[in-house]
Length: 446
View (cartoon, rainbow, N blue to C red):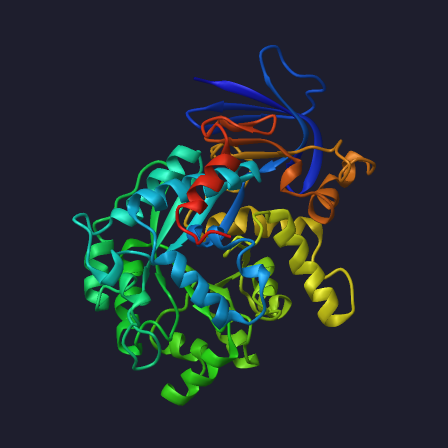
């Protein structure tokens, strides 16, 4: 049914435009009418600052169960991973569905309208396939649909514990044995109006070099996005050099993995040559600053990567927090700490990373923008909270990026329908209770 949304202040063509009416039909923007100073009769009113829906380009939904637990101690990425494996071992299709549904509802409340789920938890404990080999992936797709967000299921190939090492017991759930078997299983996944299917190489340590091309070819044949964890840890770089005499980036380049539909996640510890290889291939990079700092990974060379030609997107990864405004802000502030200089990205560039670039990274190039024919996916940020009140509306982009949080999201619209209205999720009645229940089912008691 056609509907009109009236935005008090709209982010349009990289500037704040007051009084805009958006006519929506069949889930897409049918008309953009400027200079509409008051809501037309019957229009849905979006008070505040409305921008295209944001895209969370890198998610591991089950990691949300670790929030609080992993922050209670010390250690590094590898000690964190041991706790992550314990949660992974407890998940079933039903408990994963319940957890992911609540996590995706939390994302919708944060203004996220599309998520890229980097999915490697495929099989039952011990590696036995479920009767439906894609039961876990389908649970995630159903969870996203019920939470009202778009999803790109990045089905992940994960075959080894390290270079030349078989999977450990916790990793048996992740492995299909070979890339060919992975491709056969992933090929049975289907798409619909709110679901797209892509591929992922977990990492160069988890997919043997001679099987990388199988994954890359699967994605190329389908014109699908291909994501890969890259150089998150120096230990991985050192092991790759020992095994192959080259960096992980060069290994991926040599096996045809890089390219404009590929996205490297983290890309934290790179050489100058790595940066040139990624940028020269127009390979995207997804930065996940809140996770990278939570795990003490380091600060990646985001400015250098962008300058080299890599489009940047943002992800909440382990969900230490779920807040794309914080991810955008953190990318700029981390760079300020590293360089002791301000202003590496404008608010407009950071919003682009959170919207259009993120959607493109997930295989939705038509989304993440407000234009005739684009999906009617919108996020409205309140400009009258204790965090956002004060600056004039003309500075709404700067206010959103540098001061707002997920708690300031007032409305989230996907395909022309409210998913969040006045701060309340429309299909998941109590996301906080749903999160508490789902997490309790898969974690040790405190």
